[in-house]
Image 1 (tube, rainbow, N blue to C red):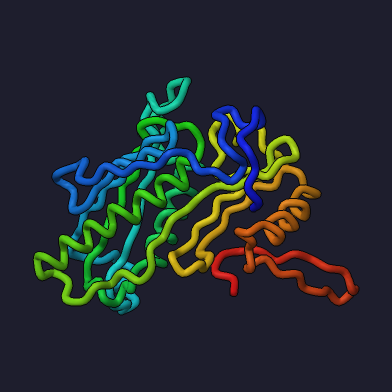
Image 2 (image 1 turned 90 degrees about the vertical axis):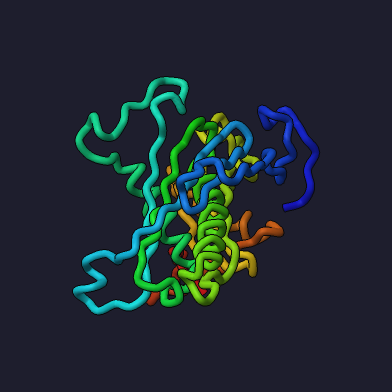
Length: 256
């Protein structure tokens, strides 16, 4: 994306391609194997990792070797302007939280060689202390830091012989607000966005997962055109011809 000056288009005065301030405080949960508090603008998420020396039942039944990584995500009742009820009061996890924790798990598994992990399960717990947009991307980025700290500790204790980490993983949101493409949306921008997307990438520039939200279908094509023209263009978007000679757009995770 070309540099653009700070303007009143953004509530905090950032340039269109500028991230909010980002800070990590490691070791925030001393009983966890690895933990960090990620502060991304006014969004704050604690990410903690714990390790169980066993694997899920389905892995045993299917004779799958190696380990597993799974995640849980929740927003504390006071993390939003209006109190958010705990999932336990509803008797089940809400659809949004379930979607996000699956996204976190997929992203972290892409950063690890599960075969080198050994027969153990890594749990990643993400608790949102304060939400101001981008809780998904903050949770993913914070989870990787906490996971890295946990792996370092497991290796130091001799529980893992070889480093299973492959490439660093991080996430960010992009969107179009009032016809202007913006990077790293805060809550006000996210609520006003015509279209937005969460992008998960690794340190060698590969797209791991991208999760789009296109409330208005024409914006789908406009957004893709912008992404392809921007400096952070998305090569995993591809046009394919159909049998009728028309073009359709294919999108999903793990595209070449």
